[in-house]
Image (cartoon, rainbow over all chains, first blue to last red; front, side, top):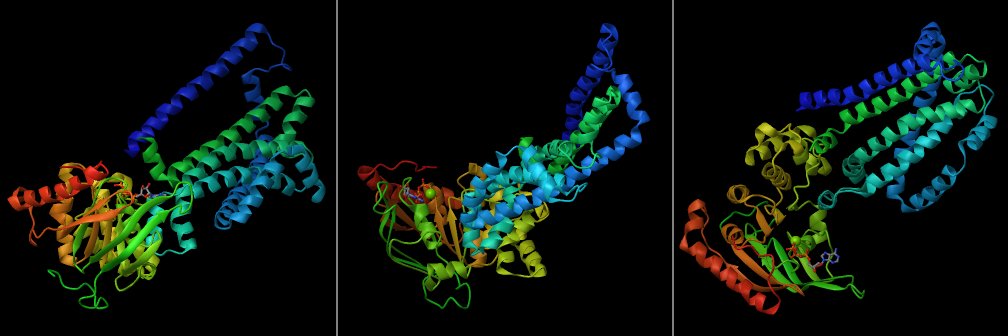
Length: 261
Length: 279
Ligand SMILES: Nc1ncnc2c1ncn2[C@@H]1O[C@H](COP(=O)(O)OP(=O)(O)OP(=O)(O)O)[C@@H](O)[C@H]1O
Ligand SMILES: [Mg+2]
């Protein structure tokens, strides 16, 4: 069963890969044919050349952004799960956190990043990671809180018949039951963490991440290099998304069996 | 009684369950008030197998949940294993199985059976030993490390029964545990349940919609009527201790089935008996 479903996964991946390759070829062809100016849209082959020549810069910028996104993602997941579990136990907290999270979500990222930048020393990566943490936290909190509430009634009655304590019920039933919700949240939050890292890098701080490099290269008319940075950003986002999917595949196998019917 | 008393703390002659004038009202005083049970009295002796049968909504599940202390009574009293129902639950004096197996997807078969023991605080070696023993009892030893979703419905239900029996509770409460199974598996499970109960001398209260199932399994069949739920008849079965496939062909068996059906017909004239299977 595992081999077959893996094979199916590979087959499923073939279509988007073929589409991507076709898209790049068409792009190259169109730019050459219509003789489009480089500062409007450079050719993929130019971008690739530029990327190879500046591989070191790309890698270090991607590492900075990737680390910001990853640290924020992990912190957001841990805090989101913890708060959701406590809120499930003490309803008052749920009533406090839900409107608060709605209020904070309404504040534009720019504003929060500026405030955070003023709170920490110049050049610190902490404000960016905090920003990612905040965004990830809300996604995880909302989903996990819902997962914790939707426990199977037969399982809950069984736990009561065992005279299980509230913390045993949380640990042995509610949380495992919420895992599919957690991984759905992680799949949404992982690419979001990457884009949030870019955006918060853009609004001030050290000029080291991809969020600074892309607009900087574009502004200096080094367009192919700017596009190479964009390509690196895409790869990073895609990497996070794939990692989240693999994690789900490994961690909640019963969900996998349910999906495949 | 045909079985020995189960455990030493269950003093001889003391009933396993005493339901005394119990009533249950849901949403009392509200617009959606439901008089689920009215003045129910029932005494079950240790080692006895008692079935509850009656039309849908007559309060069978409610009565079972009251005995299990998953719900609390509106009036009357409930003594389980010589103590108040709440204390019996805290002491894990009963095991319970539902129509849904309710297995935990993230635990393998052995770990599912060990869950009630884990909550009791048993150490791992003792848990392993007991789950292996229970798996043998339900003939699923080779599936110890399988995950629940890899089992058929009948196998899952057997795991649920093994789990209900894992702590060797003196009392087993079952709410239509075979309701979702096909006829063949169902008859097979009935025979298995009887042999397990005989070898462990467990008291069973069993909810079912099937007349033959109730007659085949029980020492006593309790017939209930709806709105409000009451006990309208109690039928002693006496088919003997060694029931097998021949029992299902015997004329006494059909005689008892007719008797239960007639008791249910009596209800039909009053309220309308829906949801009773004649198979
Ligand atoms: N939690 C509840 N809140 C309100 N009413 C309830 C609740 N549980 C059961 N009832 C009502 O109590 C009555 C008895 O329900 P119960 O589930 O015990 O019936 P049952 O005999 O088990 O039926 P079935 O054979 O369909 O399982 C029904 O009228 C039902 O609507
Ligand atoms: Mg019921």
